[in-house]
Length: 328
Image (cartoon, rainbow, N blue to C red; front, side, top):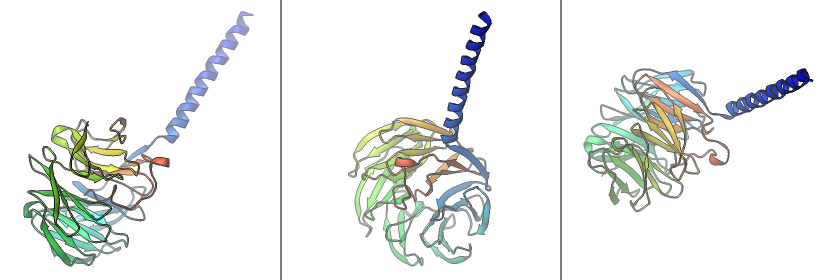
């Protein structure tokens, strides 16, 4: 009798362990997967194409690398000295801002089509809903608007130190000014300043949400600031590790690259902590591809991190608008 009770207890215990392990396997199968890929010295700006290839500006050298979804190198593209910002339009042309003051246009084969001088220290670059190219130049205090053929259409003042630029759904232009008492400048598509509002100390990344709210990272205060369309602070989310790049899912969840904590933090629309993902060293800029994978460029160890399946289902569907593309 005692033996039967022992065997029954052992059977129940083993069954419980099996069920727990099976649950862990299912949870692991549904969890995001994190992979790092070596790309070269000091990767900085990064962009995703319509076909989900990833382009990374190697700012410590003169090249841009193109990767497929598995992180395999497709092309090593020679551009210009110290590429930083990068954007890819729907036709597959690649636009790169470089440290010597140029914007370079490349075709799908990686061949240089044109170079244009746009100012001193161009940094952020984005493509608007109109297909035009917008480049923020820090030491020129300007944003330059170019057509897809790189003809300069207009140059407008954008603040003391324009750094990152994004476009809203109506074509408005949002620029962070990277100075100690930082600001965000909002301009109309014609370049007229609509408003300027304070964004604390050296604001870096910026994103425009589905409801028109504006999200700004501030590494010196370990925070993400949420503003309404008029520049009023709605909320301040505390995020340790110097938040830098930011991207949003289509429902407004935030993915924040923390440059000094070597991680991406996922927050809900209300700012609740949801998840942290380990990356390479010093993740700076961040993008979400059409499959819901999150990518970061990691300047500290020359890698790119792919967080597979970080956002999917009801939270995410393919969207090529300004909600999450073009942060740098």
